[in-house]
Length: 170
Image (tube, rainbow, N blue to C red; front, side, top):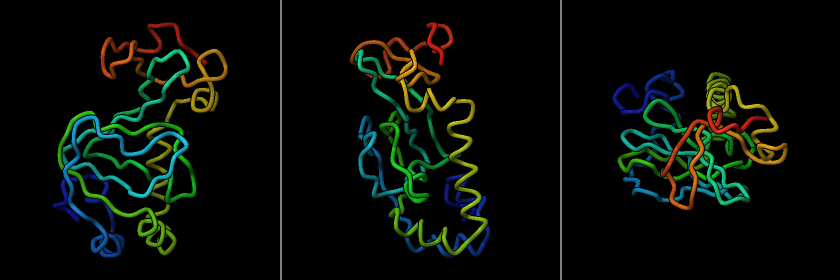
């Protein structure tokens, strides 16, 4: 899928691309659309081609921590095809086009292809690279999510600062 607009899809082998192609649907993702919630059900895998999706975690203090931003070089929701549940909320940060695939279809293709399974594991490891387990499942003080970008207040994206500079650590 060399001309898909998504680098993950473009990197697939011809056999993996052939298995996924019929299941991909082109959509437009609107600004601030919530794609899934932490702990919620994930039905679709998102391959941004122009949109940017933020993976965020809400703290009990009301602050929002941004774990990652994913654009045309990645995908969102792969953990669901691997049997996982979301540890964060996915929100469209920059509206634009994307390709989507049902989790069940990606899982079916993945179970038929070691290379696709391997790519999904590597991608998920990369998205959460350098994030200690305590940070993915707990708070900055040992029970929440201290991940790279913090936003204070109720408005997502305002007053962003590095978690390192704000003194948050695991």
